[in-house]
Image (cartoon, rainbow, N blue to C red):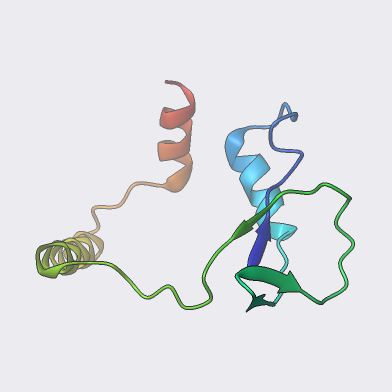
Length: 101
């Protein structure tokens, strides 16, 4: 799977969040096969010449060890308890705080 690196992100005056949202909207998926150790894409694209793409495995699985998996499950459980108890913070508040740093 290919995810194009958004060429507008580095030159735009928009906020980082706005840049990333626009890039995600522009995402596309291309299939490639490995042939002689090289990735070969045989699909049409309208990407500009020289566009850099980032390669992501189609099924990366995960690389969590037992401790990391236990920590993930505990964090998910804690998060669920926070939601049930109404301990939530609006995303706009968090983003505003991050932008002010």
